[in-house]
Length: 143
Image 1 (cartoon, rainbow, N blue to C red):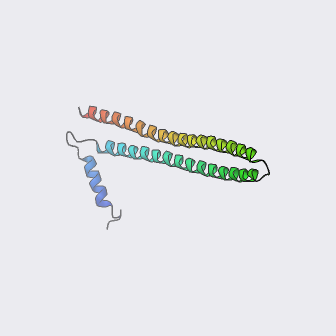
Image 2 (image 1 turned 30 degrees about the vertical axis):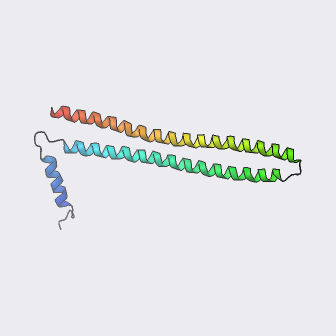
């Protein structure tokens, strides 16, 4: 092994390839830089998607905790002495309120997911547009 470590042959090969320019051959450094930017954009989009998934999971837990508290309170309220008609009316009110809250919670979670997806897709779309501009520039240099 040489003093520079086991990567010397690979480094030499990369240096030779970078120096080797044939007509019509793309700019290897520009392609590598573009690929690096592509990976950075993909990483950023994945980070946004993960943060969105974490926000959805946190909200699900909050909803579950709230629902359990409300259910406990509802059971306590139903344990009171009242007429069957009054109890039925209260149960209907509670059921209606629970349904409306559930629909609202589902909409909120769906909005969180949609927002996260839109942010991630916007990052990818922006990078795709930039990449196409880079390709045009590279082609124009060769033309």
